[in-house]
Image 1 (cartoon, chains in turn brown, green):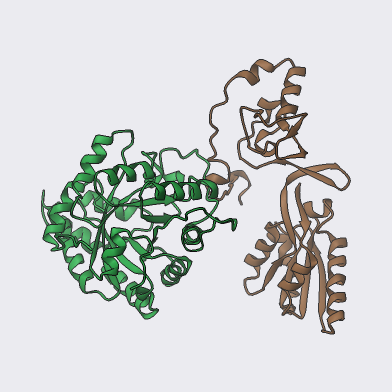
Image 2: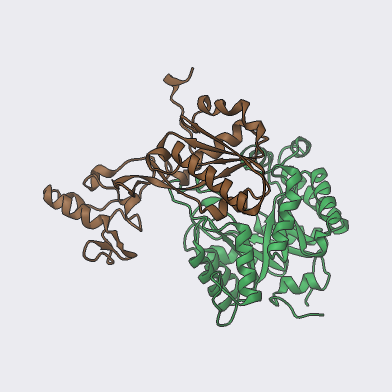
Length: 222
Length: 310
């Protein structure tokens, strides 16, 4: 899933300080799963904004709405009869959400309510970590099913570097060295010879480096 | 008169009010120092500074700083070009210190062509900072004596800061504001993209002058002589951000077989004459791509020789 975290409320209030009618829009996709942008979080953010404005003695109307997905025009359309009533819209979906809203509703002012972090998963409740960098050419099978591009701080394809110590990365003792995991895994699978082979420079054409990406699946296009 | 910012020849020529004339020299795709020296040799005495391109069009070449040093040793003043595509802010700042330490005094700050256009399209790009921020970086290092992190620099680099402007890219209405932004960020001089559409450039300069930008920064008009009809068509169709009017292609074609190159030179000579009189234009940047040996002739016929000594 795409993992995000809430923007500090102070920052959000500053963004919308001139607005008196604010719509908070959530998303039932990834951000609901990682407890940052679903219906529950929409309600919490809306009441936080109301409380802070009340303290300032300023009137405000805060609307709440949660879409099935903000990354799908079909659902974004749902806002068409209400969005015009608001002078600011806060999307608490991942970074895709505010952009789809901006594109669909060009005259509305759209603000991001969360900071999108990474593609990853939940290690346990409340703890998420990165797994995929979206390079466009998956190579995890060469590395015991683990991705050194997303998980090695230097994205080394011929690791581990000299900074690996006790299974930890040199940048922090809180970061595991994925190369330590890869080596152990490959040893367990008796595949160390594969790791000894030189991995040549990777093509990043399919990654973000090749430019903004777009995918067309002809068989699905009507 | 206040102190020079860098004391480079280009800065002195511009400050003295002379019509500047700069050239360009692309480093070799290899370590062929003799070839570089031969190409640069043609420019000696004809230009105030020589732009040394940095992996232009994303094709790997000898590093621009090393080629700049070679030119310096050959008695030419380099205008060291740096792109943001290949370096992060650490490498950028360290290269700035390096080139200054070795005697380079002009630097042109660019974003850089995307690697897709070059000979290593599978490369990662860096773009840690953009050209606007690069200008700001050099200015901060020079005038504040500080790195980007705010730390003091022990002997700051004093460079004359250049930037590029493409009046022909879109949206046209925003181009002059982007130029203004580069000047605010710290650009001392501007070299424009190759100009072929003179009507559009006149309009661009009019807007720049209306905003008073020519009083805050030296604007050098970029020109590249067309060697052939084929080159004109290639520039028109293949090179992003290039505006080659049909009238110019027709003119080159009309010159007849074997005479297009001379017609191309005549066109740039006419341009130079107009730029000498055009309000806000402080000089010309001649990019004679792989045609360095023609620069002395063009400079002579344009009446810009001898170059001033300040």
